[in-house]
Length: 385
Image (tube, rainbow, N blue to C red; front, side, top):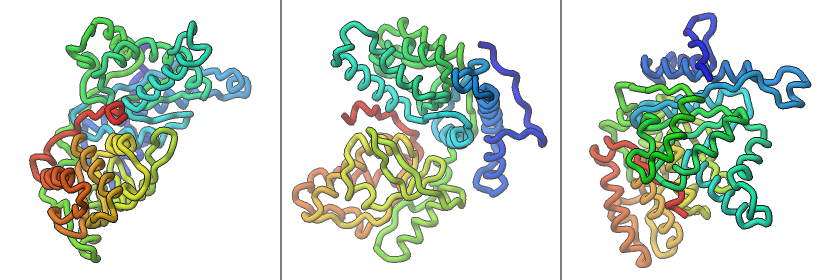
């Protein structure tokens, strides 16, 4: 599949992603970055192809006819360069049946679907990969966006070529972000030679592009800031308001959702990879390890308002808070929070006293310059099972 001719950025023909990007730059939310602009042009190329390939007439729609397969994009670069932000803009603008999910979550779903099929009456002789792909194709999916492709598991490595060969053959366009070039996927993995056809498949169906931006933008937002506030009054709230606006470049944000095992977790405020929750939103609802991993995958910076002192009447909330902080810490998510009392006074429940010592230690570390300077780390969803 040859690449489409490159679009050029002109005043007369600015694509949807470029329009959104320029608007953020004009408002001062973003600083113009040449590398990001190049990536935006490539994303608009994909959108243009998707728009051109949409069925136009009734017969096209009835036959699900598309003009040509649309070449996707594999966008790679180090943490903090803006890949997630650009994916946000691209996905919002895509005019087709689409889905966006973290790579590990998607593969977790595929494995679960294959396991269920094998247990069924039809699973003895039929192909489980074909079985899980059929409903995806039947749904009319045209665009699949995967965040943070990173292959570390041999079960995924051996499956990917077969899975995506079927998806590409069905006309699904893939856009994905990654921290590594395709040739470094599953590097030094067991039986890696069996994985190489997947790399060739990616290159055949996707444009590979680097995002070598000069700055870690999220890191700069946190630099020199007091990321914690203490107290229950207006002053603590105001400090978190200021930090939130700094993270979002002055944008207020909007409500969002995180999809987790078939349900939706409400996010009070979100904006381009940042989220803001109240303590009750995360720790007074029946959320578990898998839910927190999904939240940590979707956002690289989180603010939590109103963390209370947790005594023996709040054992369940304390356990969830401990699990939440462990997950965010392991992932490397940047945290801002307001606490009712100093950190060493947070845990007043005998049942969780030992675990809370580690939580307090991690909270102290998470406000340090060393922690804030680190990139995100891979935390597979299956580890939370």
